[in-house]
Length: 404
Image (cartoon, rainbow, N blue to C red; front, side, top):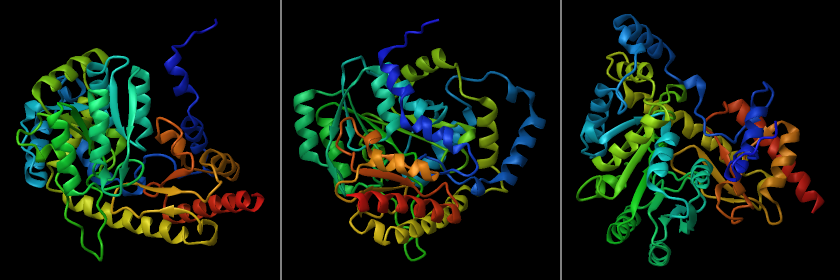
């Protein structure tokens, strides 16, 4: 049969990330491309105890549940955010989703019509761009600097395009790792409130702050916590994928009750509910006396901070002498601008032949603005694997620069 796919689906099928993921299944392949945490840091004993306890306690863990998600887990999130983030949202304002990606998908499907203008950081998450393109949104990139989105550029684009949404990740933007300053957060929030633009705040890696001199830096307030009426102009999304385990597929969206109700209705159409078993298992883990979530986050941050330092040291080698980068204070990625004349897509092709992959910048921008950059993940590969992978990419860089 000759299949005729929707034109917007073709970009998904031809994505370079699909090829990298296929290659990553090989034992000898090293991937610095994906948004993955380290398997060896998963809390396996605690998860095993939680799974056994939940399954032995109640067969209803295997039944259908509420579309909004497991009530006790939503209550735990509400208390935890109040304690750690000065975010005061009731459980009724929380929707549990199958990861952050589904939260974004549900919101965009129910809020954005084809042709609607949507503002994104530039560069931004490739997964977000895929969701917006599949919906047929008019994607408008907003310029930024080391402190976040530039307010003057944002205001000009709002006045011309009248966008429905601004999608942003103030805590360690994917892919650049930028941490917005407090002043920039307040100014962006003020502009969006004044022009009635809904902000979608992705805080998927916001807890991954790396200690400096053995001390974790103070966390900056989220945009939603800065609102006078929290949740009025900001939808806050994130997940446990980067801090506990991706396979639990448990994320959230929290905000105005009207938006949460709309997203819940879309979710009922999509998959009715996310896994009740996973949510009950996660709640048991988080509420257990045998597992301390805060200490687990500190352990992750110490190890990921060490891996980032190793990657930065490797970038000091001769192959990268003309490259540019800013060392992030958290997150999962290092964003590198390549030496002049070196294209990220071309370098990827050469690196794949050596058995290593990364994300080319072309996948992180609505246009062609980021072709000279690459995104490197430092959280998933172990230290030895990271060293080998960076050495292989360095070889590819040297080969290209030698030819030029």
